[in-house]
Image 1 (tube, one colour):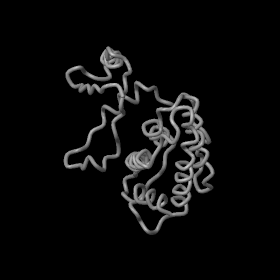
Image 2 (cartoon, one colour):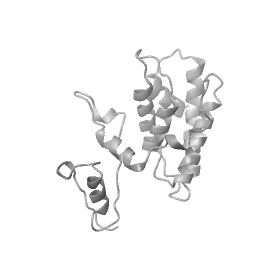
Image 3 (cartoon, rainbow, N blue to C red):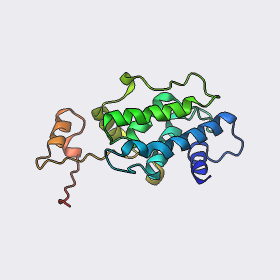
Length: 187
């Protein structure tokens, strides 16, 4: 029940009267989140946590909110992009299976029509475009950054030469004068 309350609060701002569609979506999202760590076994067991789910829900709320504040229409493109930004970091095959599982859960909601059971491969974003999009996000004037609908993607460069940063500069994903590099020692 706590997980469902979290989804209701993030997506529907705890509006008491919800349509059956919304309750089906709440249940489907909760089920998908609970099963998500099945796909992380080859990367790191139990990699996904509530923070990943919360940021996904905030992203969906922002991307799918209609003109009326109390109406949210879940969109396949928004779910895919939200998963790419918050449930990625695993190998490509496992990630595509994870996305397929999330889409299948939503597709089973009898009240949602024309929901694809799996997105087309051409709809997946490249890692570079995800980084670029992440760097474009910012909080608005007066917006509380602690409840923002996004988080930045962290890039870990295992080289001693900052090769990934050089590549991103060359691809115009970031600018050297605007980039902060944090170096950590080996653990």
